[in-house]
Structure formats: C-alpha cells, structure tokens
Length: 356
Image 1: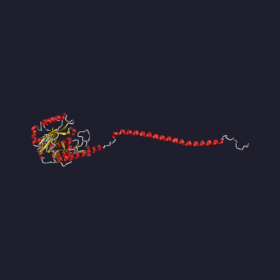
Image 2 (image 1 turned 60 degrees about the horizontal axis):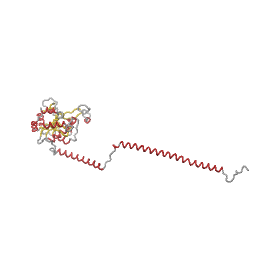
Image 3 (image 1 turned 120 degrees about the vertical axis):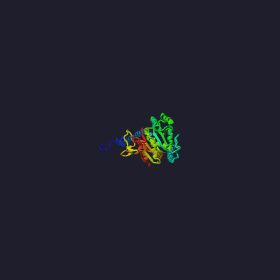
Image 4 (image 1 turned 60 degrees about the vertical axis):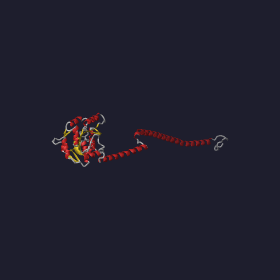
C-alpha cells in the first residue's frame, strides 16, 4: 500500500476525524452562548439588589414620615368645615358690631344721653355740685376710716348737709378678687351703716391696680354726680375741708384745670426698687417723668373727668396713678395749676391737707 494513499476504511465505519471537528465546533458555540447568560444573570442580580434596596429605603422613609406626622399631628393646621368657616365669619361680624356699638355709646356719653341711666342706686345728681371728693381706701383700712369720720369727714346728717352745700365725699374702694367673700360683705355692711362709700363693682381692689382705680373712680363719679370738680385723695392724709372748699370756689368757672402739687422726678428702671416703672424705657435717655400732680391730692375739672370716662378703655396706665393721670392730661388742652396749698407734706400754715 502506498504511503501517500488515503487510509482505507470500510463502508459504515465511523469517521473519527470528521466527528471530532463537529464536536469542537459545538463546544465553541455552546461556550459562546453561555457568556451572555452569565452576564444577564449577573445584571439581573444587580437589578434585584437595587430594587430591593429602594424598597427597603422607601419603607424606612415611610416609617420616618409616619413618626413625624404622628409627632406633629397636634400642630398641623386644622381644615375648617363650612360650618366652622361660617362661625368664624359670624364672630368677625359680631366683633365689628360690638366696636360700632361701643363707639355709639361713647358718643352718647359725651352728649349726656346716658348719664341718668348709669347712676348707681341711692345716688342723686339733681343739682349742680361744686366737687366730688373720693378718698381712696382699702379692705384693711377700717381704722383709718374711723379716724377720718371722727375728725375732718362729716357723718350722718352732717354729711347730707355738706352735700346740700355742693360737696360729696365718699370712700372709694373696689371689689375683692374673690367676689362676694367676707371682705366684700364687710364693706357692704359698713356702707349700709355709714352710707359713705363709692364701691367700684367693676374694679378689683389691689395695690398694683391703683392706676386702673383712678380711671374707674373718675368715670363712675362723673356718671353719678354733676360736679364742677372731681378730687382724688389718698387715705393717709387729713383735710382742712373748709380750706379746700375755699380753694375750689376761687377756681369757680374754670373748666379746663388740672390742679395739684406739681412735680417730676427720676424714673426708676431697676426692678425690685421702690417706685419701679416697668415702662421706664418710654421716658427717654434721661429717664425723667413729665410734669404731673402728686398723687396725695389732685383736682381735675368736669371736662377732664368726662374725657377719662369716654376714653377709659384706650387710656394708657403706668405703674403709678399720679403719673398715669398726668399722661392723660398731656394729651389734652389742660391748664396746669401748681397749687402749693395741696402739697400735703409741707409745713406752711395755709395748707388744705396734711399727712395723717
């Protein structure tokens, strides 16, 4: 057999060379197709991991938001229903009508239409008086009142005769913080006997409320008595009543006067010190009070008492009543009269008042 001749094979015998090549081709083809499958599986895993992470993060975010909503649920703005909105609008309309009514009442007061209706029971203003004198007092000042009634202040029939001369004198006091308690009952009982109190039912009696007491006193006094002058007197001074009447008669016909022992002085800005003024910063860098009458005894004319009555709701009060009244006088055309005879701490013979 020739060495160069092709190998002999019988019919039906396998062809090893040809089969081997086919298997190699199939092997290479299968290896090529498995590479994309691996990459697809890898990226599928990454996608699922990403989706799972986002779902977990969203769940955490929902937990945080739910916690915040529960924490701030009380602070969330309330969604008003139609009925609630109508109620709000109704309240605003009612508030507007109340303001308008108050303005109309103030106008009626200024024109004298409400004077008779606002009188307290038992008071009379049938004649023109020279003066109404309000002597400040408190729940613990019963002994002082007894001393005054036994000295310069008339009682009983003498008090009535003094009113016939045109002078009304009343102890001025508010109500207890606990309305109707023993303090109020004791004052009511004392007044039934002496009939010499002006009880301010709308005022709460307290040392820190003295400035408001001035507004209530002048307002109530001018509503109940038609007088030429209205006088505020502290409960620690005695009066020369005849001397005071003489002083008032000398000012007869002066309807725009503000009479007192005029003074000024430093505004105390340190809390805890006597005469501390919380509104000290309003008085400028020098912190000095404006000119005003001392609180021991001061006199204003009827015109100014009416002004206080009409504007009492909007008048600013300071820590002390004398400076408060002085601030009200600064805003109107008042004639200031520095009257030495009402400087109660002085020692001159012609004083109409003295420290008790």
